[in-house]
Length: 127
Image 1 (tube, rainbow, N blue to C red):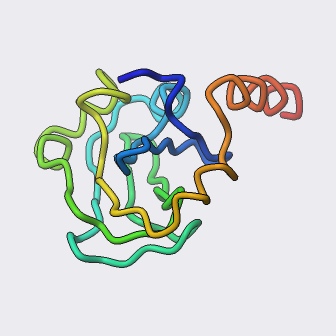
Image 2: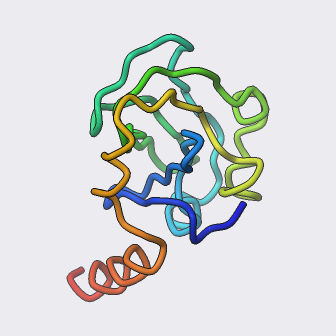
């Protein structure tokens, strides 16, 4: 997957133009050992910014937000069965679910990979 084609949120989710959604490499490194992922149900309608699921590490649980509005078309069973795949391959095998994107213009509101990297630098400075 070409990382430069992905769009990122300030809450560390990414979405591909095909609607696959996952968390960024930065987020999986911060979360560390992922032990459980709760994925949304196929057919569920998600609004941009709404909670789509949960990701849990040995330390804490974190919400996963929908980067754009749409209907859940597919969930990644490999992630459901082996959550550690998110740590191993956040952009390839570790995607979580795929949306039928309702309004593709919402993708323009998200960050490019370069903008996301700049955002991470500013976030580190502000902590």
